[in-house]
Image 1: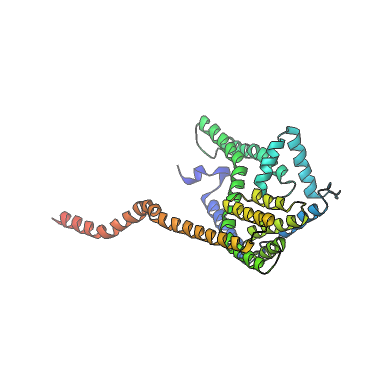
Image 2: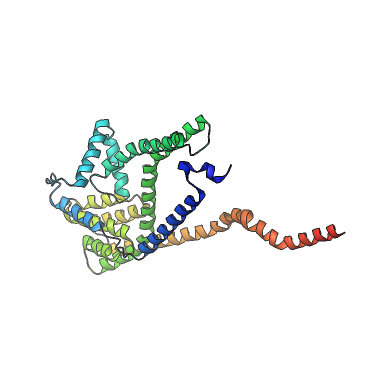
Length: 326
């Protein structure tokens, strides 16, 4: 059996090499092109903040009628499909909406799109997997193994949206936690300069647009809600609900206390900033302390055998030559 016997659709080895070389060249060109683009981290986020400001200004009135666009039509079809199968429960909508908001996705149609892909993706991937396994015979497995492979592909596709969403939330939390001490220092400077809380948050958000767009997005939205919500305390509670971090909870508790009792804001924020910076340094030291233990297995598996071959190889060859000559 040669490699050409395992290739589907009668492909030859030369064709496979040509396809791989072309794909590698295309990916290289794409990487070079994307590295030359100038990206603005807050692009798209400002539009979302503006829509949030308009919604709050309108007093949560019913949305205005809009002309149907291609995107609206596609979302409408997704909504009809999800409503037909009755998979959007009220409690589930609240839970998924909170997770999407924590991931930075605040579109009204995000829940519908998420549930649509969670419902359609397993069926689509399952059809592709069964056609590839049973139709094109890409693997030479027993029938039970082929069926198990198709079912496994469907299960992986079913879990893919949840894994993707959790990954987005985790990365967003890490970015906010890393940039929070520096943002608090800026907030202390703004508070000492005499700015109000919403003006200070807007200023900090504007200064962190490029360095930390995630934190700038959350602070900008909190500043907008502070200006339009009837209860300023609710805006800070919403910030805590969107970002489930102990550091954000401590900051919002300090801000609520300062709003309620008139306590000095700058001193409390300065203490929190120093505490969060020490926590960040401790996390870095913890990762550095774990590095020797993590590197032990790669050192034993990959580096030590090569080192033994380099050091003992010439001596072993010399001993073998001498024994053979004798």
